[in-house]
Image 1 (tube, one colour):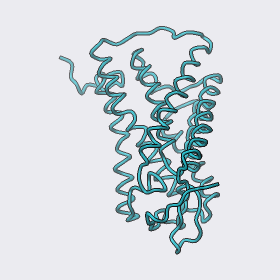
Image 2 (cartoon, one colour):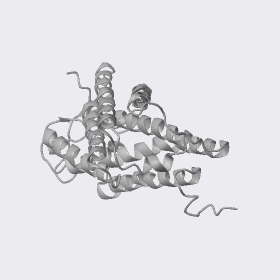
Image 3 (cartoon, rainbow, N blue to C red):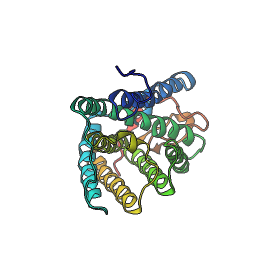
Image 4 (spheres, helix red, strand yellow):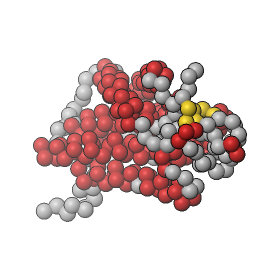
Length: 280
C-alpha cells in the first residue's frame, strides 16, 4: 500500500494533500485571534466588522451573488483562445469525491482565513500607523495587497498584478461595506469555482502552482472583481449595512470602515452602542 504521508500522497491532486494545504492556511486564524487577544487585549470580533462580529446574513447574500458573478466570468474564460476546455483527465471516482468534499468543506474556511489575516488583522494594524482614516486605508490597502500577492510565490508580472488587484478590490470592499463579509464571499466563490473545476480535471496541483497569466485572462479576472465590487457596494447601501463606527472619545472623531483607531495600537476600546449606520 502507498504510504499516506509520502510526497506523492501529499500532492494537492489528492484529498489528503489538498486538506493539508487548506489546514495550513487556516493557521492564520488562531494567529490573528491570539494577536488581538494577547497583544491588543481586544475582542477578536473587531477583525470581522464594525459590528464587532461576523454579519452572517449579508455574508450569505454576498456569497450567492459572488457565485453567480464568478461562474459567469469563469465560463467566459473558455471562449478565450484556444477555445474549449483542452485535455481533461478526470480522477477516479473515489479520489474525485474526496477532492470535491475537501474543496466544499474547507476552501471557504481557507479563503476566510486569508481575509482575516490580510484584510482583517493586517489592514487594521497597518492602518493604525496613520492618524487619519482615509490615508490609513490607502496605505493599508497598498501594503496588504502587495503582501497578499507576494505570499502566492513565484509568478510573472501579470499574475502578480492580478493578485494585487484582488487585494486592492478586497480592501475597497472592506472599506465600503464595513467588514470582511463581501471580501470573504468573493474570495470563497472564486476559489470554490476554480478549485472544483481543477479537481474534476485532475489539475489541482497545477492550478495551485500556476506562475503565469495571459493578458486576456488577467483582464477578464479583474473585470470580474470590479463587477462584483460594484454590485456588492450597491447592495450594502440597499441593505443599510453599518459601515462606520464611532471612535472612543480618547481617539478623536469617527471614521468610515474598520480602520479607525489610535496610532500604533489598532484596536481601541469599542462599545456595541458605538456602531452607527451610514445614511449617506
